[in-house]
Length: 305
Length: 305
Image 1 (cartoon, helix red, strand yellow):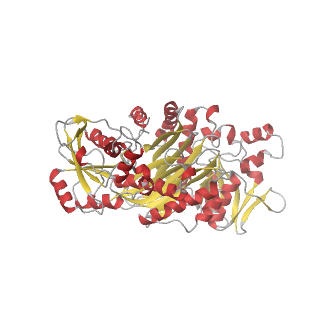
Image 2 (cartoon, chains in turn red, purple):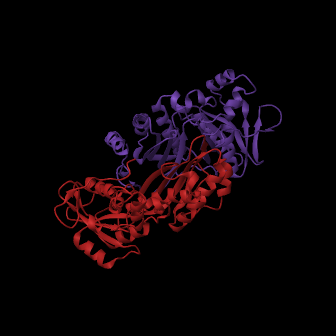
Image 3 (cartoon, each protein chain N blue to C red):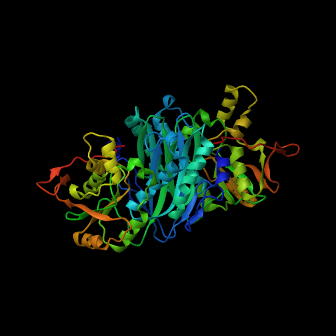
């Protein structure tokens, strides 16, 4: 079905000014700028783990598969350029499924000027697997890594946390424009996106930077969906627990020097709010402070692959 | 299991001089040369289609998954730089399988100076899917595309064809060095690698170049394995049929101007033989000539995805 699918695709795929050669040859070619720093990331999604094929709109699955990759580029403050889309399709649903997946991701690719530069289309007797590789470039402002946080840096977060499973995990906007703007205007030391869970991804920055992190749990912006999840599943998990440990918020976590953090918080330069939720500290590990009493150890929780 | 697997990987993965940031952050970073042309390809393999997990050495599967991608870079005459390895692992076999797959591909990565720059590791209830993205760069000699063949160009092929299923599909050497050498020394108009089948991949060059192709079927180098396949499966398929239509030979097909073809054939600059197997012609489609009589139409056959 690959050649038929490629014929159907012809003319539908967005390009990018840096794309010299797109789908149809043995490989795609991007003509990057002088001294280009090429940023590459891959995320793989599967039926039953990242979505339930029989229970959702297939276009939303395609959109999500691209969006999670763009979120990784955003976490580096890289400018997206292209993506390769590889599909392993259940043979009974292959042509229709492939088309809907691609139709779902094309508007997002267009929005972020991402060329669909190629990929691989296959069928098998198993379930749906989607693997997307996104390619970006560093801007003149450089890239944001995880390992640059200093002791004393403030932890800023975009948006709200928890309960993404109720819908945001499909429909979130990857924070590409936000990361590019912040990196262009401000001095940011480190960044990541929250894919596995706020507390777990925060611990990734702290560990990579050789320091600890203290979360002010009374300041974590809790999404309405986190409250709904806490109500829907009565038990020990509060809305705050959902905010700290649910995966797939796809918000930005930033390490910012204190004065710069004050400036960002006063400016509020994004359409989405930025909130100070804690700081990086010398003592290793993850700690929580509720606003009263002593900091307590906090177990990093989230989605473990 | 991802963090445990990444810990196990630590120190085992080859790097590359162009790799600025490897696994562990949100994305990998490659620092490419001035005016870099970045060449990118993805191939996805699955249990039951490209290998049978229960019947083969898992290290050979890992090696194959990288080798098919390097073959695509070779088909463009691109210099390999890095690869991203994404795994969807059956949860019952995950840690051991992941390690053996990676152990199988590391020697090949080292041989071709390919950094393992990142990827994604997941488990699920389904079968094994491996998706690898390989990144290369164009050399000063440019890239070889499929669409550059001219009428009158000779068709040169490396190696021998057919019967790859008996073992070569696992253990082939991607023709990276060969393609780089040929592209540096000679005037090559177009190239591809034979992944789907000699006749089918040849028709891809002809179609992309807006011409036809005439195969001298009496000159096609037939692998010993093709003869074995013809014997093992008695029926209408001859060894030549296997050579023309079996997939996964991973040899090079080149379109070369006649005098340059004479020079290459006289030089025989590779460790593997180069053979003239026909020419590109004005009449569209694929044609065979047995050495006697008139050319006859030849149905392009091979692996259809």
